[in-house]
Length: 264
Image (cartoon, rainbow, N blue to C red; front, top):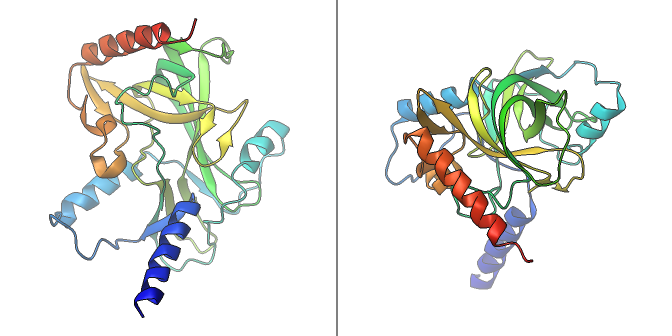
């Protein structure tokens, strides 16, 4: 019996590690034994604050016909997370470790780092309607890093993708999909964006950019977009509420140090 239980535990762990897009929370279901016990109302407000910035898309909407959009959407085909037969509204969150290290400034993991304002956010279905992703368009104010010399649209716009969005099904019910700990940039707000061509779940992509993380700059203060590792990751805690000049100064220093560390 002990061997049987041990095998079951190992199998579950292997399954979790092998599944890059694993649903772990549905509706308002929570951990049965939380420690310490969170305030349900506080948790709900937090979820609502995150959810309100996610764009929505109709499940019955026609898929884009242009080749560029088809190529973008096809990357998300292999993960089946959408269920058009849902019978109630709710949330679904996916699990995944998506920040490669513990630095609050993922400089070396970002091909592009820019200061910019969100000019649009839109949700799209995968080309087989298995999943949903969002695309954020950023109007650039300052470029801190562009290691691959990417060309920006019109010289001042860059777009980046992020998993998730709100899907409105034929039944009229809505489901919210996101990677646990990831937020969505707010339309019109200003952020320092860390962008990468390599996405943790889908592998290296030569052309498309993905949003690794970002910090909102508001009224001179810093507000992290994301809260990975249950909100304990340095990205979520280190610069929260601090003066934006500190973040920018540290970013410039980190970029200088990363160039010094490159092999000659």
